[in-house]
Image (cartoon, rainbow, N blue to C red; front, side, top):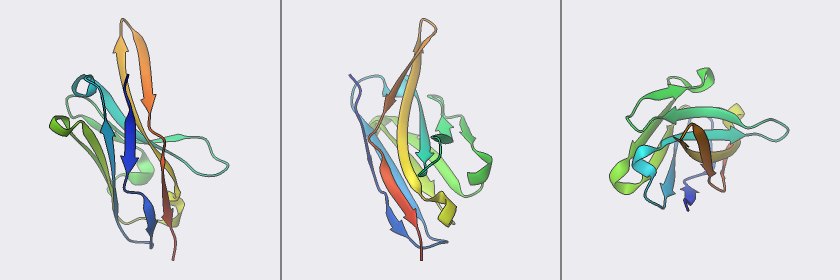
Amino acid sequence: QVQLVESGGGLVQPGGSLRLSCAASGSIFDIAATAWYRQAPGNQRELVARISSGGTTNYADYVKGRFTISRDNAKNTVYLQMNSLKPEDTAVYYCNLYLYRAGVRSDYWGQGTQVTVSS
């Protein structure tokens, strides 16, 4: 069983920075891809960034150049460094880990951490 625990959310002023962390239990972290999603009130959950087991990254257009996803396989942890934060970045951020076994995708989710960007 995989458990994901996020930390690092909070209140920050526009233009500020936060770093989110997501620690994973279990033994599949280094073969799984990981991602960060977010969900603002009234909106659907949307992909923010993802990183493959090999380190390939992808970002949503609205965070390119501001957010950086990284992972430390030795610590079973994925990070999201968020810079130049905007009020529209306010949302609950969710850590996601996924992998394919025999063509079937399995997803694991954290409980979410609130990020609020406001002056």
